[in-house]
Length: 231
Image (tube, rainbow, N blue to C red):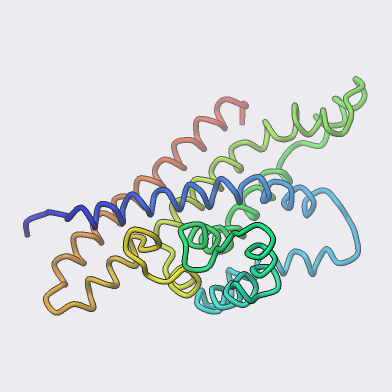
């Protein structure tokens, strides 16, 4: 099998990497905040919040994409405000594809970061408090550095997961070449064409290599950071 991708297919690869980067870039800071709330705070409705942020893990991706379409479509409650007030349209756009990936990978980041936060020795935070460090100082200078392996690994695994997201993206952002056609969608399109199995196989190999690289990178960073903080 001769391995050759057309410029349009390389564009799908580039778009996949860009969409995944935008999804993690937007989702990771919010995931840190929500994971902190779930790990360190007690309040009424905590169980409901925990269930809500993990909902994309158990819902079919197509259902998640449909819910995004209902909420962020140009006639949806949130989408209409964004479109009419700010001229922002998410549905059927690259930004919409990034949003769909961010929503689908948000629980992955939450779980990794929350577990890492809960593993931080509270005695270290207490020692910093006795030395006069406030809540924000303790969080920025003690807790987050100690939880950095979980934060970084959560981001990398979420990025690798974004590379394979299909259902939510095609439902909310459609399959538009050069705009929303990511690598999984390009594979799907190749399989719809008679004789496209070879092209789909080539794209699948690229997808496999990218996913494997992401997982190996997360493992490497996890070991390096754990060694750096002395675990």
